[in-house]
Amino acid sequence: MTGKSIRFLIVAGEASGDMHGSGLVRALKNYHPNCEFSGLGGEQMRREGVKTFYDIDRMGAVGVIEVLGDLPHYYKVYRKLSIEIGSGSYDAVILIDYPTLNLRLAKLCKKHSCPALFFISPQVWAWRKGRIKQIKRTVNKMFVIFPFEEVLLKKEGVDAEFMGHPFVETVKTSMSRDEAMSEFSLDSTRKIIGLMPGSRNSELKYLLDIMINSANEIKKNIKDCQFILPVANTLNTEDIKDRIKSNAVDIKIVEGKSYDVMNCCDFLIIASGSATLEAALLGCPMVIIYKLNWVTYWLARVLVKIKLYGLVNIVAGEEVVPELIQSKATVKNITKEVVAIMYDSERRESLRSRLLKVRKSLGDPGVLDRVAESMIDFIRERRKGEKISI
Image 1 (spheres, rainbow, N blue to C red):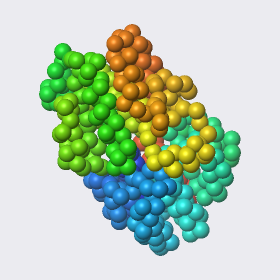
Image 2 (cartoon, rainbow, N blue to C red):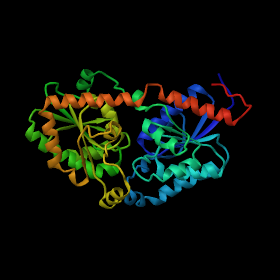
Image 3 (tube, helix red, strand yellow):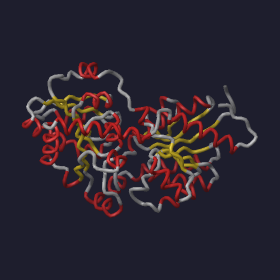
Image 4 (cartoon, rainbow, N blue to C red):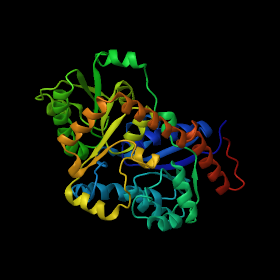
């Protein structure tokens, strides 16, 4: 069925937002085929028909120092999107995570009486809780992905709703473990350790060499292990190969297919971020590491009010998997954790069991369909008297 066209401005600033944005666009089109989309995103959103004014390839900096290094580009993006919001051409703006930019855009939405629908909340439970007041003033509705976020935001008077986490349906392998092992030329008789340094160039800068050097040390302790590294589509594979080729340990490089890689692995050395939750949904034991520029890290320590850093641990409410952050993220410490767990099969299986329990707290499949339906209903109510077929 068709109806009057609905125009969305949709804004995602990094790889995970591009992935979730593409799925949401697809779901919205299923409910209302005449939806049109413009905004900021990556290749996945473009494949779903989003007209992107800028790509996300230069939007993935982490921390104040890194952002300042490319400030003119960030300002240019902000200016373009602010002009679009002020044009009055859109029925609603969909803001996906990326709070540094998107909360500023929400203010503009309020100024120009354009509805702001926020999908994937800023982590106000971790830091800058004062942002909740800004969200209450500027965002029409929050679609959150953790149940504790709904409780926190509703308590402060924000229209927030938990409909589940999109990972419960998007985290899927494309082949069986045996098929993946064959495709990646992995030896089924040897232990497999995955290296996942993140999806941003700034993360590679601080984490890739540590992971490579850790692989060297682990190999000395676990002779029959093998290593594999899936490269995110936001990164340059050749750059990574150049940094690895002089290394004594053979590290297999795979472009994309991170879920299939995770499903093959007995263990992961993984950058803190959403990938830790994806790994948990696949039941893969891991050690979480992260490093930042020291100035950025110092600021984070002052501002961030949480004891756990890894998203999987935050969702679980306890340190299910070990975390090695900043000065603790050393080759020695990483090697120690990996070797200890790899030689303890009972602990490894216990980790798998605890990780799989995390899935139960994240809702049922069909998340994006439920969010899309709610967004269309929201616009239908605003159009009062105009019929929108869904």
